Image (cartoon, rainbow over the protein chains, first blue to last red):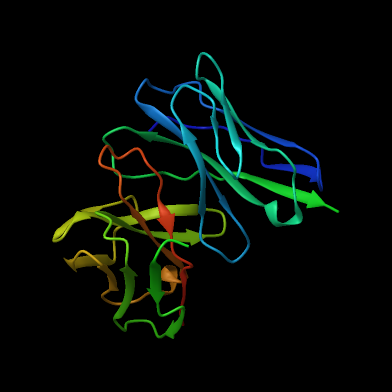
Length: 110
Length: 114
């Protein structure tokens, strides 16, 4: 599996935008970029995924670099509820499984 | 929440006893997964299923077996529980014909083996 690299932790203030980076320099053409988050004492929660184009949904935006070697998850206005561990994962088309790394712990201050 | 129910939510058992964890879904999704999560190791795949009676091993399958006799239920069995299997276990489901879509996770089962 292609690997991803994320910062161990990031901090943000409430109501400010948050940009969570992810590097995936060995990504292949059939790898989809997935983001999940895990709140304390809960299971992981799907956030967003994409292949080449930027994606938006009600939770976040995903910005994918033109060469696809990096991506950024954008939370437009952080809330205290967004404090979680965020995982950037590559899912290869045709493969059933998902491999989690250590993720980025996002701390949100009031 | 996706219709995923894990049972039990908490269990304490003794070393050497058999334990079965259940994952029940109401989404009629084809794929089901069992992960475990431990401090310092993150989430690791134990087994997964790609249809009724079709299962395969993940990266940490030793000491675990699974069964899927119907679409909605995926059982994880520890034949003889050990203290190293103390963990939080998460079930996940996915319905993605091209296997690129999202996984949806349950709320977990906290298992303690004493």
